[in-house]
Amino acid sequence: MSGHSKWSTIKRQKGANDAKRGALFTKLSREIITAARQGGGDLEANYRLRMAVDKAKAASMPADNIKRAIERATGAGSDAEQFEEITYEGLGPSNVAVIVAAMTDNRNRTASDVRSVFNKSGGSLSPVAWQFEQKGVIAVPLNGRDPDEVTLAAIDAGAADVGAPDGGVLEITTEPSDLEAVRTALAAAGYEAQSAELSMEPTTTVEIADEKQARAVLQFLERLEDLDDVQNVYANFDIPGELMERLEAQVV
Image 1 (cartoon, rainbow, N blue to C red):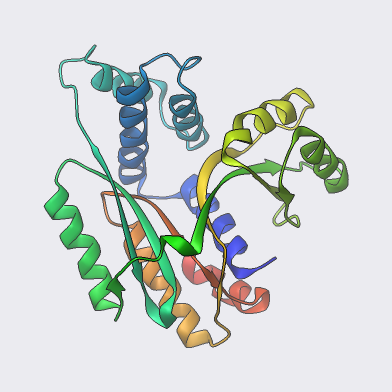
Image 2 (tube, rainbow, N blue to C red; image 1 turned 30 degrees about the vertical axis):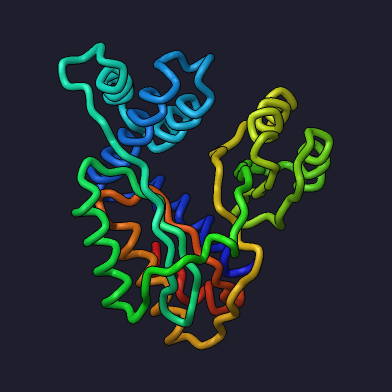
């Protein structure tokens, strides 16, 4: 498994075990609010909202919090909120290309915070989106089952690619339009997803084999992810598996 894929796994684990539950729930609430504001509060009719709610439930977000977030977005509550989605692009340490997806009620604050992290890490904001493509990514826990069986089920369901198992989880890639159909087909076959979301996946990668450089890249990405307004961070680095394993304890 490449360092990039391993980092995705670590991020999922961190999200599930994050001690800063308040900060995590705030980010999840913003996803729910934005999805409900754009497509309405019906989970059956609003696929993006259903994904956001599923993600919140996977992080053990209380049902009352989820309900309040939907009400705040649809005006059913007393404090409807508006968040703007903004994407930033740039180069970080070792010329790693990065896309930062944010949701904010203050564009100037968010831009300043993101720019500050880039500048302090020796990076800069610049166009890099051409180095990425949008994909659906589904993480399926194996729970002791044969990974080949899950892989075949994913391929039959229309998956574009299936990665090697890591930590008992299989990562399945789909075309964006096929994400829900593949997730539903896997669930019908008895393979419930741990997560299912749209992601920006790199088409080219930057190899980083030096431990000091690898640590700098990971710390830079962590600082971006810790910003209150940042929802997701995508990067095109590739750290060798052995080196990533050594650094894992410093990231989780």
